Length: 345
Ligand code: SF4
Image 1 (cartoon, rainbow, N blue to C red):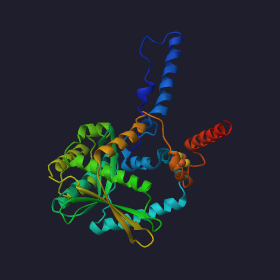
Image 2: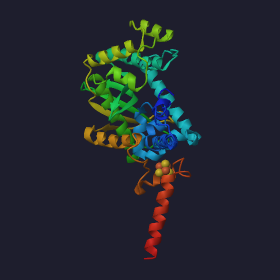
Image 3: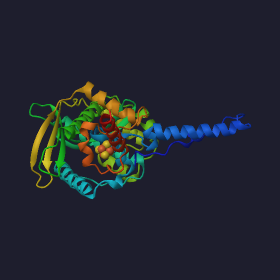
Image 4: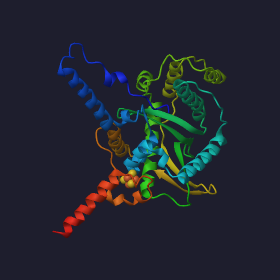
């Protein structure tokens, strides 16, 4: 996967400095290296899972259960087949909606830079549509929040009857019911993060050089022939990844596109595509930033992974990982102990 990267071996396995390898010193250095390696594995999940960046949905899913988010990353094969089928069904509804507003062109990519160039070319194609008051779907957004790069794709951007730029997120439901408030919170965080990233892009905060360096993308990488052909077909003359990224950042910055004014969630039933309901999401910047900072602190290794609180233990009943969940086992054990203590007091 594009966001995965091996740890830089030079960081942890660097040869000891000259002159230090004498007698017991060499052994001590080996122990130190092992200890540092162990700490990295335990303490910095971003490195442990080889992640260059996170998806918006990684973070919003932490609001449901962080431990589950991590298990899904570690053991995706445990996700129930019916859930995977429902996700596939949801994806085809999204695809059908996307096809309503534009054709999908298949472009062969050869490198990670090619893949990112395609995201940029998509943005460049959508800017004029938004400038002329049109509607776009699958708008890529990315940027840095609290020291970590985050990537996402906005379902739909369009102008409301009041002329405000509205973000619409479609959620498909396997049953004809609206989600619980706990599920809704994850959706609210998701769309709020999209807004933060989009607003950042149109305000020009993304620095191409820092972005490329942090994601380990090669600025001078020549674009693949199909990507170049696609760019030329759109009237753009670009040859390297840096060309496309800089062009995208400049276009976004000087596009005079507004920031997103409103956030809307749309729930529809997978069975027949009927609309179940819509929700307006109030954007509460400070609250969202506070929550996101907490979620990101796990990925930075500033705290241990957290499962659900006791009052949300009902989530465990529908969780694929309940039989292996260490958090759940610990909580169950501590509750049993508390009950025993009470009994014998
Ligand atoms: Fe989270 Fe409960 Fe699942 Fe554990 S069993 S991952 S605490 S939902």
